[in-house]
Length: 367
Image (cartoon, rainbow, N blue to C red; front, side, top):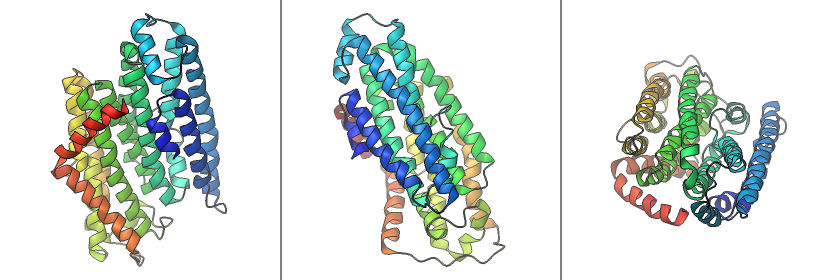
């Protein structure tokens, strides 16, 4: 409810209330395994850093109200359109505070510090949810506030997001190369994908905004699917968390290995998956908006990410396991979830036009 409230809010106060509603729930879920030190540590770290970042967001909202006299998103847009406040220090400072607050929720660099430790320490099922839900809600609100309400200030914030996009993509992918724990690898992968979405925000055109919604849906399918395999293979996701633990999976559990390979291909942006089409839309939007350098950096980062995603596929099919692989119990719910995820990942990659059209129409409602 909190995430839906945040994504659909027409007022900054409601954005804040929605954020707090879902944040409080996730703080509790992150520490669900109270007997495990890592779970408690992740919950405490997420709570402290989350509360700190929320302070920036609230202060930014207060300054926006002080400068414009309203917290309504449409009211802010109308006020800035008819009032020349483009160089108002109060408004520019408020804009910076909002970027910090939203940057924490979507895990963009340099506000990403919590992500790897929290993802690793939280129960894997909760990590899967955290990697998709809050990011989607955060970007929906981020999109509405900056591409609609603060669109008059685009010349001021666009280069900040340009730098954040480059840093987020690059750091996420480079650090992911060195990870041995699959949950930490997927955490840095999540950071890198936030960078790709920021590229579309910088483009700030129709293809970019529709591409964001398309990419968020595609990311939900492929990332939840990958975490689903981790949960199934690792006995609720708390065992076999090293990448080397996936050695030999292809011969012992061929169906599970195929599913994991498809999700890894999609995360890497290899056709004909949803990840490839999503990145194509995002980078095309950047080129169309004139940010060719940013698009090139994005493509290079995507190429770099192929290494650590395909490393898992290599482990599954080209390495022999040094230990006895665990038995796998397919529950009906897990089987349905994984097949829905793989269907969505492939369907969105093979027939993307219908999904992009829905995204275009959704933008009209969102803005």
